Length: 341
Image 1 (tube, rainbow, N blue to C red):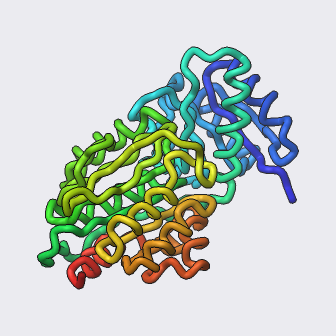
Image 2: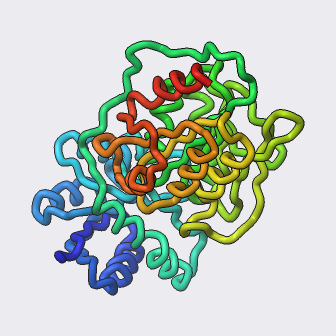
């Protein structure tokens, strides 16, 4: 198999050299070039035809987000953004980046090498399999609504690579009448709170980073905090709350979609809808099957609209997915299912 050709774009010569040294140790990676700003990057892309580009957000002459917006329509390319803790990463994702990693704060050389090996390298390999250049804005043909009378319904969503934009697209199709929503999106600590704030201002939902004891209420989305806590749904006095507790990684992730979905199967049973979106690997697939076996309705994003058709495929192959839908149709399907419950 041919190595993954990587272009590194960062204004720090020291960081560029460190990335080159460490990424080149992996035989599946070939660093074909580096650039210190978007203008050098543009020339390098045309000359070297990289498979994946790593991109710093803060760059001289043109910031990384503006560069992405100019680049992606003309030269679609899987991009992994490297960023300090900032909500600018979500602008980068909106501009077409596949994924992002959080640069360690005040790192030593050993910390940086660990970050490159355990985080950036993994993201680059995933990005090399991603589909880019075919994203379209989700247009709701008709705004659905919840007309059911049950008050104890819940919607559970899980996603990974490409999921920040996929969740946003689905959330835009939901109104304040939707039953309570619980979400696990694989994301570094600190970013989930900013992501929740972004969705809170750009959708019709109330969105917040979850805390233990938060009630699951209509029109509200609770997003599991990134880091080392799993989020579970629990039934309390006829309603639902979430618990966020420290625990080991499950399927390589914390929080894990698997943990959330299994808890929803146990707490809500047939009163739930489970949705599995774009992402690498199989996190959540068995949990979605547990939900379906408990009587819940289940939806999987289809291959054509996934950035990475991993998690939904594993779930589909297990028999966990009842309805496979394009991203633009998931909100409508969710309402249709809720209205029959």
